[in-house]
Length: 317
Image (tube, rainbow, N blue to C red):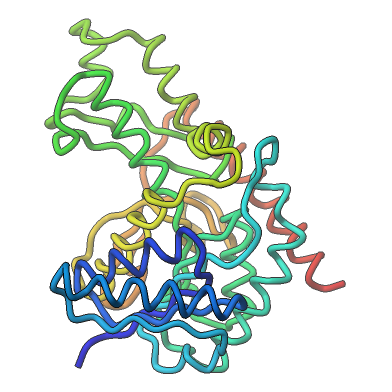
């Protein structure tokens, strides 16, 4: 029997998610969105592509949350997206209310699912989603670190003119301007980036520029597209997480995971590397940070905490 993935939000990310799930034959798919005609039409269009791409996943669309029933994975993209000039934080009030509603529906229909939140501001929204759904903290995560790390890896591969397959990197902290790309842990075929700087493959200045570009990754795309925000890479990132869960791959993936003492943080969702397997987030990987890294990470924690507290107050009104 095939698994089932429910996608809450049938916009650009939702549609791309459904297409990737079908192509990979990960599961059957239900797209859920208040825009019923668009949702059903998009699902039908994607389903018709199965005869060309030769995949057997069923793809359906609905506006009814009852279709969450028996979902093994739920990926939430519902909410307002960024417009040019907006930060992720500008979305907090509107999206807090939407995410709380989605969480209640998950609690009602699929309380044992593994839930991945993509809606911004990410770190605050995943906290709202977990509380309103009453999911175990290890079964509700935020997609951000995989995306931010993917951007960093891409920029590094272009800087060094090497295959993307040979580049490894990851990002800590909140999904926003306070994120902490850990250059010390970035490697090209196992060679640390600081060593490549010493070998004069690049300069510290260039790497700092890449770090800044990574922090502004979503904003750059948003400014270029004007009427939309990134959706291909965010969808691919969430699929990597869902696949690791469904196939028990136990991949170490950076994501917004619940911290219960790790990194001296308790009761907060923050971007950290974590093992994702059949039990959800099975282990948070706790790294020893240097003084400057710790300072940046703690600053990111403060930003996430402030935004999360604001979101919690908004939904209690």
